[in-house]
Image (tube, rainbow, N blue to C red):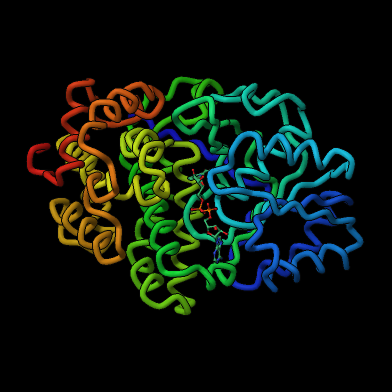
Length: 399
Ligand SMILES: NC(=O)c1ccc[n+]([C@@H]2O[C@H](COP(=O)([O-])OP(=O)(O)OC[C@H]3O[C@@H](n4cnc5c(N)ncnc54)[C@H](O)[C@@H]3O)[C@@H](O)[C@H]2O)c1
């Protein structure tokens, strides 16, 4: 097979301890009126206030919108964009976890193109570039600082929704691991497990025939040479750093590895896409109201077990990246790592009621873009078996 690769990334990506201090100079090149999107908790933090001062020193007019809510309800993004109009921003800066970054993407989109978020649900619907956008993550997990997606919750739909477009990739991302030093252990685990799941799902995603134009038709094209490169590096870094970062939050080396791993995982899944673990998490998250990272990580070992017969080469490479003894060691080692950092082992532990298994299976099977990205096909019946196995904690029935 011919080699094929595709990569989409911010125009400038800065990674490293202390790189946040470059914000003033970077922002001054992009605009004069900066709208900062963050949340209530972060808006009072000294690190955040220092970032605002940098912008003011660089002669930018600054307005802070700290109204971001977890999982970004659609109405909150509409209200923020409406509020910001009178300020006439020419630059949006998202500072915070995945929720703040997704909110910033959505507000920049609405300020540039008008309309409502609902107008842009799906892939490749955003009509053109959005105003300059800077992303500064404070969790190491979602990869939103480099991805083409904003994930929102819409009260009119039972599942979360996504706006996927290369136009949503931030212009500049500043990934400073010092900003994650304040993340408590539970948040570090959830976000880091989300990142590891992104990397594994991107690396084991389906490989499509690389017809010309594939990346213009689809936002997520499946695994390829470039996404593989980032996914494997992410797996190695996260495997080395995640447990240490959870056990000792001031371990700077571990924090660096986890944040770099999360960003590289974002570069990987931002083109390759994710697959069945994400498809099942959407309805599970809607019912249990548990964090996205907890759900996808809980599901990953079951999905890998189902996929295993078709991904032996990938499991071998994951084993090498993680320093494990061959492909058969990968799933048990992943289960053990997730257990040590406190990820629930089953959907039952996550709070899913047994009578909801059918609904979850039905809804997940309906998310075609993710199911079609899974390396091993899943009929609705097989999906039901997979969800039931993940509920009772029985991987052996999936072999
Ligand atoms: N756009 C994407 O590519 C993408 C990918 C995966 C997930 N997501 C979405 O991202 C969201 C989850 O993001 P998240 O996991 O980063 O959590 P989050 O952004 O929802 O934040 C969770 C909590 O952590 C706090 N927090 C953030 N940084 C902190 C820090 N440094 N110290 C202490 N507390 C801190 C926040 O204030 C908040 O209370 C979900 O909505 C999910 O669907 C987006």
